[in-house]
Image 1 (spheres, rainbow, N blue to C red):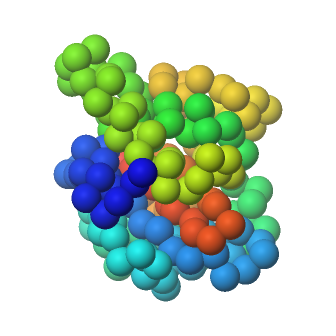
Image 2: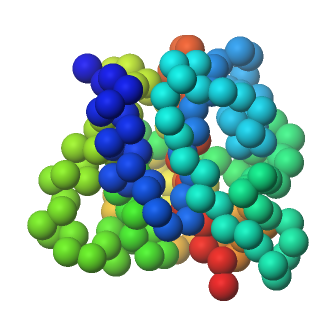
Length: 186
């Protein structure tokens, strides 16, 4: 059972430090894209009062992204076109991969010795959203295969920010929606 303490530890393990974002908001619309957009635009609070992180970098090059506005203001249709549905197994792989440089698990230092703990943290995060969460990513490898292995998938993304590159995951239950993202800025 996920509680505030296990949630905070898991989010800290996968999203502590680095250029990352992890936040949860309430589901208030039938269309999940509207709720995801509200979380991305920092217009919600975690319904349980649990901690998230927002370590988005300040972008001097583009001037389009910052900690106060890490995501571009996409409409629901634009957001839906940029995100591809994936399975919870692929979502767990992606949560782990987001910790690595260029969003690749192969680039996580000492991955072989840390793999079990990283996947445990990913499982805790996903458990918050129930036994059958709905998951979406902007990783292009998922465009045609919802069960794609995302630990070290191809490096193409439908970027949703003003940063050089970004990759992430949206997870929804009937009552909550989470956004988990990592950014790269030259």
